[in-house]
Image 1: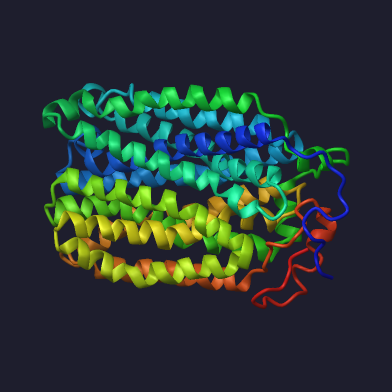
Image 2: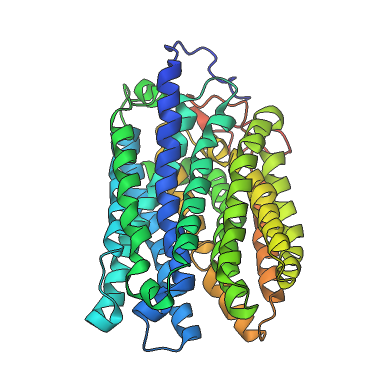
Length: 459
């Protein structure tokens, strides 16, 4: 049974241009804060957390220990997705978006106030891990919720484009984090380790206040308003797995390359450039900034393209391009040329990851019905984060250590992630003409029955 065309048979008051603009800003700002927070932690893990919180170890072991704390945040993300997603499907998208933003941003601000190992001993890394877990718990629903809100407000035929505002905000946040560290890099090393590293974390309070103020003014999404008149599902996450097992697995698989490479290149890549190749730190950070700018510019194009040709062709192309770029990325990095390093980051971020992140928001939202969308989207997405983004820098660091500084094991690891993602999306349904307001019970009857052809619809 084919799906109903988007919006067909649904009478709904059109959202005003002013409200649409507010929704897009809210999606972008919230995602910018989340990724500013996570990118700060990522860069700090690579550059300063080793000597600040693990000073009893040598530099290499301390860096690996800080990468481990970075990965710990991902362990909390599925639980955050479960909790916030559960109430997001039962009480509404808006209150959960405000709460998750406050938890993520508040944890980041408090990291900037932590004592160092020299001041508090073992309590310092323990508090760091606790705040990292809280940060991950909030982020587990923040990004998915922002995408869902944008997609559920989107005009007909533009869900991909509107869903791209969240990943665009994410790249702006990543670029801001890298730019902040780049500015601080001019400080004497002693000052940087003593107090300079705290400044970016404390500045996150400004983004937090701005984001909460904007989101508090939004109305609930029209899709949730429509379905909230009927009884809510008791446990939406369980229903998402029971009703849409294939779609749930598709989201997990589709996340591996996009999320894994999204942390592998800016986190491990910076460490590899500075510690192994001895590239000046400011040049490595400029490479990350260049990649973030490229992805910010390319993401809306690929999102727009997915509204025209489908989510799957664009997403699969991004995964395959990313696989093809792994060896060239490290070959360009080994040139130690600042321009070639910047080009390498622009290719992997702008084209490879841009083609995956562009259609992702709309695609993942379209895979689940409205009564279980927040739970299914966030829970499945964050399971993918545990499997990919969390361990990626640590795995890459271990592979380079085992191979005496050579990155080729990391390349094969990245290609494996890309291959799994390409297969998962190929296995999944095409959704860009589906009706995101369709009843959940009807949504997924065909999920198990329809073969995964290149352009079959989801209902």
